Image (tube, rainbow, N blue to C red; front, side, top):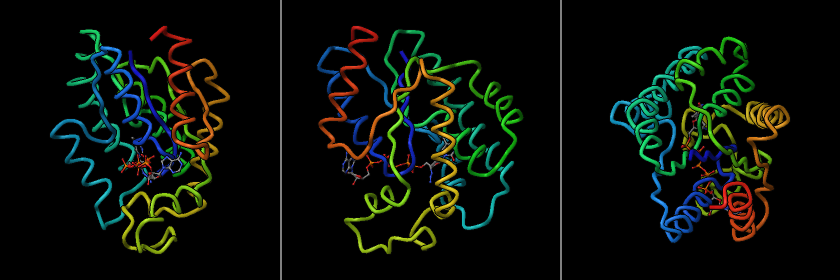
Length: 212
Ligand code: Z5A
């Protein structure tokens, strides 16, 4: 089974993935946790270019780099793991590309979908949890415990995080559009709820749908 988590930075994906891994492991499920971009040697190098580069990257260049990282992860790790019955939990997958490069950067959605189809080899999640939060609130949450100024323009942020408030508002709009078109696959969760409440919602949905 392939379970993906989506949402803008700071929505709480990592927090919920860690809790879900603990739960599924206690149920004797073999779980593999991965993140995008990353997860293979080459994909981790691409991650460094994408997030730590101080130079501008064109929107199409960015799309192709995320897609190259994805191809490596899907072919080398995800497909083989699913084939032997593992539960794969993935922190971001192709919905991030639609939301960030499509709605955020403004790349044509038809062109983008054809590149997604190539990079995923047709792999689609069984279920996708989307944690919904306003960009300002997510930024605050992510850096609240640090002395980093709470603006989207400061140098402490990575290349994607510096994209600005309007960009992240468009990304969120993208996710909400994706949900309305993929109601069977997406589960939309209010990320402002307490961590334990969100965890219960996720486990309840999984138990109902998959008798996990
Ligand atoms: N990207 C893209 O553009 N296109 C693509 O195709 C793909 C990715 C695949 C990857 O960033 C970047 O790449 C990302 C999208 C882009 N860029 N942006 N901007 P990343 O992997 O470095 O990080 P991330 O996935 O964006 O998010 P994150 O920083 O790991 O945040 P998170 O996992 O969603 O949140 P968290 O770490 O679990 O929680 C954040 C804080 O909130 C933390 O202090 C928690 O204790 C707290 N928290 C969590 N839950 C709660 C609740 N419920 N209440 C209160 N506080 C909470």
